[in-house]
Image (cartoon, rainbow, N blue to C red):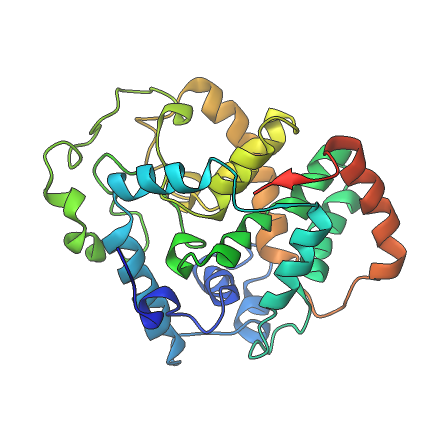
Length: 290
């Protein structure tokens, strides 16, 4: 399957998806800040680019598409590099059109992880905050934006109406396929999310890279931090196990740091980098296969 450049990149920047999350999920403690300080897309042409992003995402993220992406990427034969090489790549994704921040990705990741560290969480949780978006290196391998970012959801069963822009699933072939368009689809009640295929993107990709190195409490937020239909609306409780609910306490702990730590004050990269170099070396090998 091939895609035009417009189909690959409907957003001016992948960061626009994250900014759009703030309009859907304003910080409960300070909604006025969201209205005044964060970009509002209601009267902007960008609402159309976000809609187009999700139209493509919901049309093409099928069960077979996810199976194929797993075959393509989970052999981890694209490139071997260090975490710092991956961070350097992410720094090419700075959104020059973003008036909310002129920070590069390294600084944005530091804001997230430093907020976590400041609240006294374990160092592996700090590291997870620093790493959580590194799966966006998928763009290095030519993946379209809608297969890198976006709210995630299970494939292989009926799409919940709690997923953003659910009307776009009408064009998804799985919605007409009797194998996949029932409540449970190919799954069984409360089978556990480890047995459920999620729409393809940076969350699942990074989880698969990190699963042998970090505690499970860190892996759940990496894998499910974009699974908004569940941790916002409990839309897939029929697939979740008791263990999933226990681990989702860590997803819930992480998401406020992910959404609300973006502020215009840059962290001191030179001062902080030695700490993160030591932290990365504590948990991860010198290079990883992507």
